[in-house]
Length: 557
Image 1 (cartoon, rainbow, N blue to C red):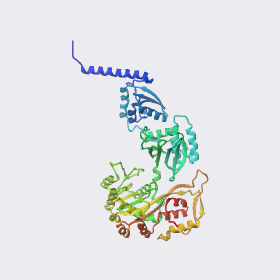
Image 2 (tube, one colour):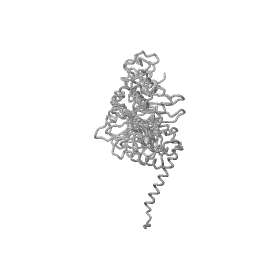
Image 3 (tube, rainbow, N blue to C red):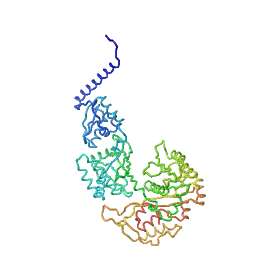
Image 4 (cartoon, helix red, strand yellow):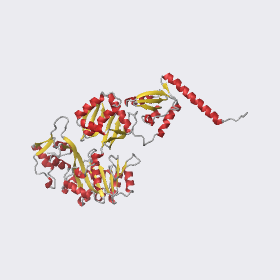
């Protein structure tokens, strides 16, 4: 008799016994909790089902989807008492999934979770992309061309009971935003409803109210698309996804912050078409534009544009980069974030503390660029590196947060930049604001009041080049909308001012003079201030006087 002990065979038997015992325990627990039992050892796992729940969420809830039929999801559950599981099921319900639970052994659950590693990245198409069929988009865009029409579409969609209800509402939301030329979508929960607001031509407009259930479903769907954690509601999250619109990809930046009545959501629509504006169409006065055309083609130097967030600084710099780009030069940017992609230009993005503006700029200089764009100068280190780059054979484009062109130099000094280097490094300081343009078909002319005439006269009082002052200062134009759906405005245009470096200014700046003294010296150069530029555009009917008054400071009389 062979008495040899086969340890491998015995271990295999023990493993089989343990697995059977584990399955037996799962069967007993299924009866206890009145949940159907499933042995998934031989079951084929559906990848589409698996993708409905992010891996991190599945592991935290000890649950995973293994089959999917339309909106019915088969969910493998190991611990029915897991508190995270309840939240997960709630979120799946918000996404209009009907969940069928199956109690499984730990072994079965691990088998499903292991399949996440096998998911092909390239095959993962649904997450992060929202596709609107071209015919649907065209139809909805046409139907939602006014706020009233958009409200009617929402009224119909929110009463739907189909499985695709949330998708339909999202289609209407994005189509309406495109039709109304919105740059941002705001969802702001209140006590018993959620307010939808659209930012159109720089101003927010109340558009619709969603009931709590609909908003909760929208929130979950947007989170899923954005790639953020579905079960986190008590801290800020940022994500991104894209919308396919007529074969064009529109990137959406999603921001979630907790509020008293739920998460506030802001979606920024980054349509690349909006930045494809020629520098000649920005609204820059011909005299200033002629000078800028020369300055941006210098072999070295620095152009700084200033203004608050949303004043169009990035669009202006992108238009300059497109104008000067050629195969003979290398352009590298560092941005936070990269909002729009430019063909033929190397674009890099700030990444927390690992890749800051300062660190990125140091690296860029070693890449042999001809032109560098720095998204924003925020600190002294970045300022000094940018100045050194401008002094050593590079042309640098960047932005600052100041009120006007004269404020650029005191701001750089406050950051710790060497004032003695300004004269050699900084060639142009610009400032800009955006104002709404009057719709050519929705405006009317009116006479100026005596007070307005005196104010305008005061605005032009110090202008060195009097040839720029309009001959007729009698009338202005204002919006004349036909109904409450209209504003009388369509699109926006820039107001600009610029200061150019010369020997007198360079010498003056060495002693770090105050902003008002710099502005007085700059008057001699004979270029328009933003206020003067705005008044000229108002007199010409490009914008309204009220827009100018609301955007830039005019002298008091």
